[in-house]
Image 1 (cartoon, rainbow, N blue to C red):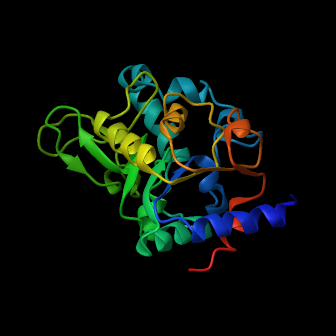
Image 2 (image 1 turned 90 degrees about the vertical axis):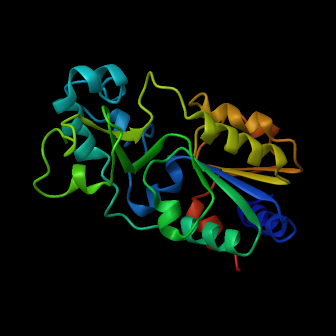
Length: 245
């Protein structure tokens, strides 16, 4: 099949499915202007004093907090970005009763901004931050607003505030993982999009899928292409723009 035929088949599957789960990675947000991590122009191929994998680790956050926040504020502030057509169509599909859950590796909050209600954020969110001592909650302004301190400090106890994002060396949240597994294992159709499926343990979640249609939409090939019932190597916006709700 050519790409147009594949997209038509994708739309037909959507129209005939009423228990769909969407599992997405960084590629879902690139059309909003947010760079992904592992492409040739991605975050991990840019040059810093330390590799991004080192900066975005628990050890680095504890031992080099000021430098962690310099990088975090510079590169991970997604508060000014807007949802793209993929985010918007997914929210509309949920409203129509077709999408039962979104599972995302992204921390940018764009699914919720588009209107999605059931979102399992495997790697946390830039919109949630908490004091490492007293656990008081803070929104994103404590970190990203103009004039924010180099290291955000809790106004109640003076503890250091940490983003509720999963850093390297940190485990995923058990409740989030359990919810994602439940949604995926009960889905009739699983759409996996915008992810290389090389980051564990998140990528291993698709092994829980027991449904009918496994659809992979990604610019490049993935290790799971041969398992899918439909593979589309096209930009997500081009594919989701064709969905009429």
